[in-house]
Length: 31
Image (cartoon, one colour):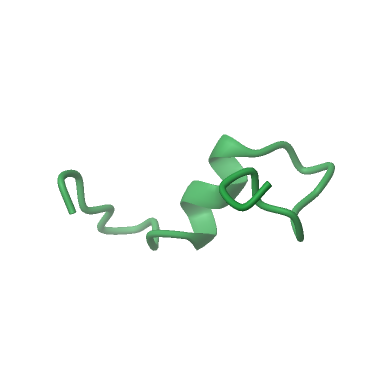
């Protein structure tokens, strides 16, 4: 919303950037 990512979809790319590749199925947002 505030900073729209043109090449990074809100959820997919952003998720991998915030959380480690150790748990790609468990996003820290829902932890």
